[in-house]
Image (cartoon, rainbow, N blue to C red; front, side, top):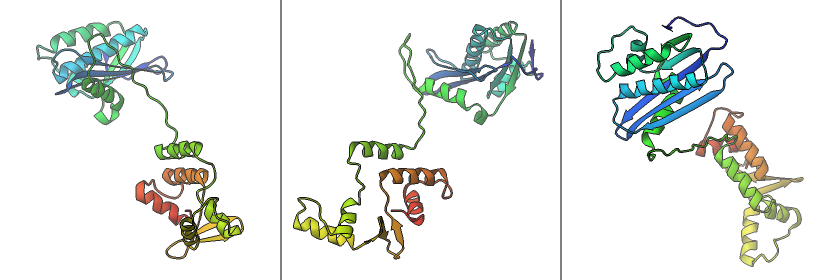
Length: 263
């Protein structure tokens, strides 16, 4: 049954498809989703010349074949090609001789479904299939070869992960340890040269020790609490996520941290 009537929910599956044809090649992308939100993405680089509309039809036929392999009987299909969707809904005629075989083939495939509906969406609402199609059009793969694409979850920003790696590799003592010891006990690091001692004294003049907490005197004479790597990592994440306002990056992020009273 080929219709645009809204099917009843329940065991209904969803499919998004897209085709891409550009100077780099031709590719298709399909995403099939089960009623329990299991996703089955697929993309392929096409090995012969296609028009963009042919690539759209090719993506649709592959997606329908995937649905039939999963024994889907109720399917809701989304695509961003106005021409292909309206032709499949029977609202537009198919005159292009290159598309007529595709249209007839899809129409025959739809007979295997109890209910199948076709819906047009904007490109912004078809991003996953579009990304797969574009990727497969750009990547060169030899005939018969398959390429594995790894997608991993990255729970923290790259620079926060780098801080963790550096902390694991380096000594866990805070960066300000020598300054704090000098202000607290007047001690220098072992084997410190006279030049290093003079440098440490000059640096220490810009800091204030209050109890066990070290502060950096800012240019406007406000006090910024010195933090170690672990605290710095947490502060960076909180600032970037918006705890101290809107998201920030680069120099803006650094200024927000300073304004929050940390150094």
